[in-house]
Length: 322
Image (cartoon, rainbow, N blue to C red; front, top):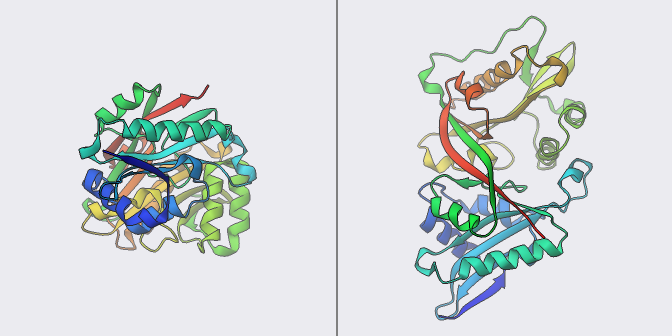
């Protein structure tokens, strides 16, 4: 068997899509729009560390790996310097145990090392698919552990069935108002994020507006006219496919998403976190959305108080490059 390795190219996108859905599509159904958005259109992809394995006998794509580093020159990303990511690695099950995965990973790690990456994370990349290795893939976890990757915790996706609720009400607090963000408040909102939640959430909000977002996907909490909290909500009309609705094809009715969310440090401990999630549920419920997913969270007990249950589990891994 002769395997050729070529750099990631969109010319092989259909084959990658087919391979993904053949191997893991039952649990994580991939759409071409999502593959294009998160892999082929993301400028953070490190092409030198992203490879496709081809069986030259029949010109068949039998494996691929995608690596990323944070390339954008944005103030909110300074903390990410020195961190790289393996977005995904996948090998056709008929071609496993032949060294293909090892070769793909070796090429990715070499490129990440040459790009001055010190820490490699599995998933968690900008425009990621997974926050870690899904719990279903026990052999994958063992495979990475043998190659020096260290388990450092667990993350969860949670599911809430709003159809079981007779109604979802908008929280009514004396001095705090919950509403959808108005586009005219864009700068005010981004300033709030920069001050209270600098980093990834600010980065994602900046991209939301760059892609034509008009505010309807953010619930804000206001007190005395000032924004003191936020909650992202997603549906089919959001300007891009957001994390918590990646796997919407698993549902026979529209899927909505909640998160991330945050309350200004000075206002915490007053129940506003739960209240703003409930507000997010209220706005989704009134759009006719009853299936809701919260992605990439450790806060199982917190969301359980609103009737959410664990849906998917991930183990998070990292490796320090020498």
